[in-house]
Length: 484
Ligand code: NAP
Image 1 (tube, rainbow, N blue to C red):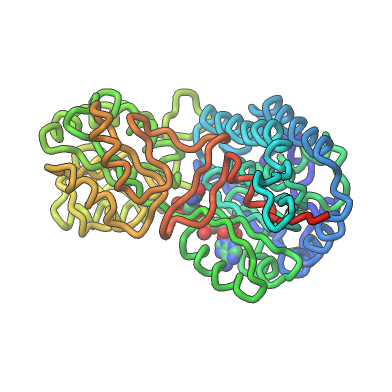
Image 2: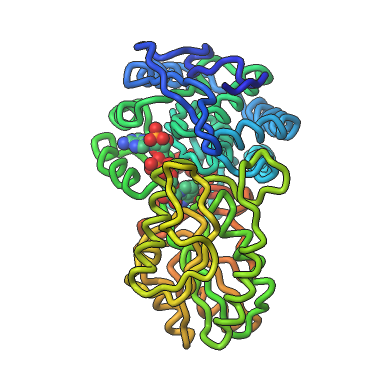
């Protein structure tokens, strides 16, 4: 069992109180590196969620002014930085990512509290329009939308909630949060910090965990939750779109990806290979911005593949708490089996294994460590091109012309992250402008940052997180023509 001074209460949090499930039911949280139980968390359902919504609704009218809310964000930022080693340890144990990487995620989370603390005053200021029309001055106010329901995935247990709770509080919205069942402990630690260090009125932040169907159902059917921000799979996102119909809820959806990584024949191949390794193996390949399909110009295909294979063979796989480990385990057996199936499918359709182990040598019953794998001779009909693998697999695909790179890169219903590497900026930007992805790194495979809007096109979602647009998700615009 996990021991931590930040986990004094392994419970939900409703109306300023630590609470268990009404039913007394619990569910285990496992360490994916060894399968051992870390904790038992409450398995809550609709009734607890209804109480959390009622508490948040009651807190709404007395949300304090901008200055107080800014202090909350600053204090949370400072506390996260001060506690990054301990939060990172909890995160590493429940998710499996290397401890250093986990600490980097805590810093990343803190950067959202920092950004919104610094930008909220300007971001929320009313805007008086320049033109006097119909004998009126026109002012656009930004009003807090109300109680926000926030649902997060397991792959960034604190990064994903920071992107939502920081702008929600900045805007003046109380929140009801549902973390992923695999990784609730990091979130509980964050709540403990906020409970201990902020003078928060009851009901401003609420945490429910357990039955995703019942908690999600209650959040979606309640007229008192006008806004839902969800990060997770496209399938669940589509369900939420259907469920939002009755109360015409505002939705922020950060969904799945299928990122193309395009290497042109004038690219700096060493830099492109380094970027690919850093991007692809972060979180053991389980990030929505991980390169999923690697398109390499045929003139440099062999040279680039050789460089990547050499770097992949040097990576160390193991328990994230061990020193020098580059890649931890996959989060669960379903994740392992998906990578396994993608590799098996590709090899059966003619791909060649150039780094990693043959799937016949691997079995998710033994452990969740999947060796970093590179396959060549990949074609579009293979599962690894059709779906997000969400694991440590690099599939290499050759192309001959820039038109082909664009056409193949866009050959997916997803539109989240993409990358283009090449020295000729004009040529690269012509390609970027044709890619239907909300994020496109040029000569970098870096993911999002707090000050910039990030989000998906097409099946990858609706809305943006980060930047001014990320704040606007939590407000309604009210236009006031003033004829006095
Ligand atoms: P998921 O299965 O959709 O789960 C995400 C969250 O939704 C979890 O908290 C889950 O709870 C909850 N959930 C499941 N069914 C629900 C329902 N019927 N109603 C309400 N909530 C429900 O996704 P995941 O497997 O955790 O995450 C991986 C996916 O997230 C990938 O596709 C990845 O690309 C995407 N992602 C996108 C972004 C982005 O910024 N676009 C960022 C990170 C991840 P339980 O855990 O209790 O099931």
